[in-house]
Length: 384
Image 1 (cartoon, rainbow, N blue to C red):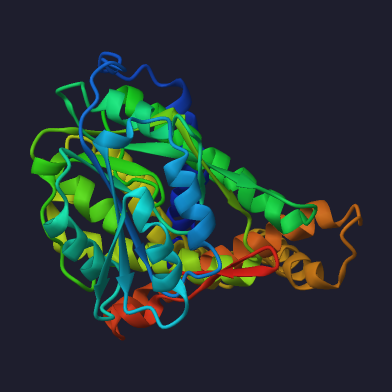
Image 2 (cartoon, rainbow, N blue to C red):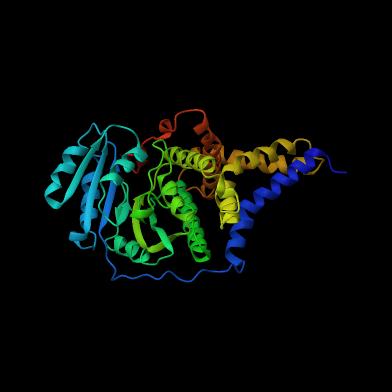
């Protein structure tokens, strides 16, 4: 009879394989029942309020507002609202320069992104709310594509596709590969029915479906759309609506990843119906979202139980784990053009992402606002 350690190792290893390899294959090859294609109507234009929350974003806000003003959308149907979350730099001054162009500045006490968005929504006049962040550049036709999707009566929220512009560092290429998988998975789930979260810098919703969220919410791009999802609407990806961002260093990506997954923990607590029959996409949510929270704990369970496996399984499992950890540790010492970097960098990136996932549980131990940190892109610093 197999020992408890053997059963634990087998269970953990099988779940790891399913989450990393099995579910993507299932998503790609299983003949899921697909919903009808989105009935886009480019001619149906409605009043849109652009919500741009920002905290100390002086280094990016001018470029961002110019990007918004360059959108291919009728200016008389565009309300641009900058919500300054207690900024202490030149953010407000720069935003005020755009008042003649129709930009409104709403200054609120420092309370975090969710609180700023709640304040902005109260002031919004548009039938459509367009959520964006201060750093990313928007394609001129992006808003038209999002609004066209919302002409479909089944669609409550729609997000665009974020393109990560990578440099010559291998770790940036690794994160770019991960993000391409995420976009692909969202495309697959959009065809099946619905996705579970938007890209925070480029998503839009029907105004009547947007309800205030708790001010300590870390994932507004999940919290707002899920309200519409559980009212029967779809949350979709439109790959024709594009935004562009620079890749961030691995250390900054750790912080962003930890905050994102901490927001997922919040979502699970506040939306337990995601794990029940009310969630018509529960298998995909568990496999694609909850699995990310479980990955580091499954890896630890597999590693810990491997010490009590029978030989030669013990040596094989521990040997593979040792090689993986050695490659991750060696990576920072290798030159960028090293051939070994092609495998050491993915190992290091994976280890950092697993650590971020494990640390995300700190959302239950500290104030969620403490998890907001500035994100570095290239040689610059961006805002929350």
